[in-house]
Length: 62
Image (cartoon, rainbow, N blue to C red; front, side, top):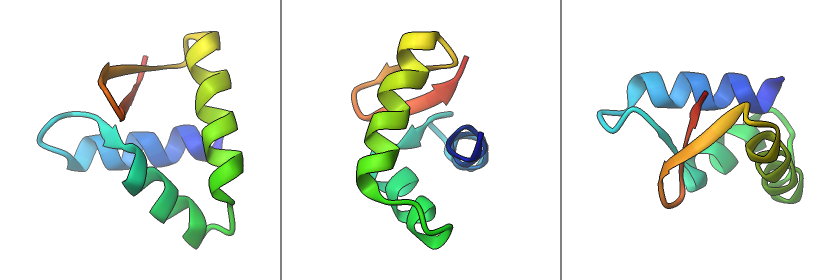
């Protein structure tokens, strides 16, 4: 759920309404989460429909 929370936080702050992958990874690192975990989690969350990618490399909660 932490990756979802990070996406929510970043997308609320973004004028685009989505969280850029580099920002997700950067914030996740502050929580001790690796880049590999982030990319795997994003793939899973997209497949489940929990998050979507309105723009390439930019994620938002569904």
